[in-house]
Image (cartoon, rainbow, N blue to C red; front, side, top):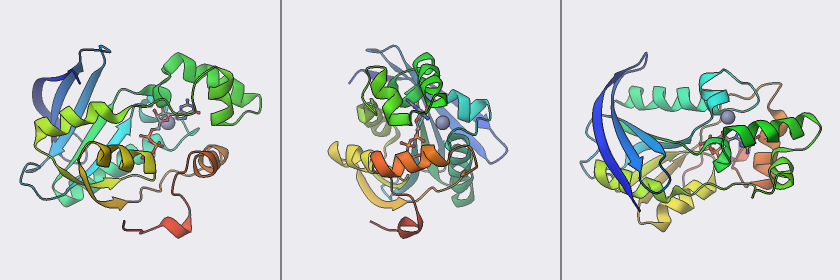
Length: 203
Ligand SMILES: Nc1nc2c(ncn2[C@@H]2O[C@H](COP(=O)(O)OP(=O)(O)OP(=O)(O)O)[C@@H](O)[C@H]2O)c(=O)[nH]1
Ligand SMILES: [Zn+2]
């Protein structure tokens, strides 16, 4: 995996002053970022999040999904703990890219759910590959994580390349009138652990 570290700098935010580490994937040309707080290389499980890019939700306040709320909640949780990591992965639209995600939204406006829309465009429901996380976590000295996610694929992917997931921390925020079908499709078709039965679950 050809992901290389390029530079690190401070990133002051409303929540904490993080250290921002920049990486380049030399295969895809994508530029990824890790935000860390505190000593994450001490061997103890680190509160962490793998966050896939969602320009619409993370930066443009979209209510079609829950991404913006999850990003903020994850950063707040890391700040409250004084220690943690967030990998901001440039896998826009579950890996199909921004313009294809807008095409998918167009189909969704016509009645398709998020999975059907991807499939009609000739894509898999979820095209993300989390292998890029391994060199980033290695660089940061992180081998064990308490992962903030509702997505079992992220847990399996980390375990698959030898990162210990000490705990899955549910991240159920950002439900609104506009993303009810999106969240229902995540739970029904993509296996996300959403709903009351999964709140507070420890794996
Ligand atoms: N193709 C497609 N991608 C979407 C749609 N809505 C959101 N996304 C993308 O879905 C991804 C969501 O990323 P995450 O929040 O990290 O992951 P997740 O699978 O929801 O899992 P969690 O860790 O539980 O949040 C982002 O890349 C979004 O751009 C959609 O309708 N179609
Ligand atoms: Zn989103």
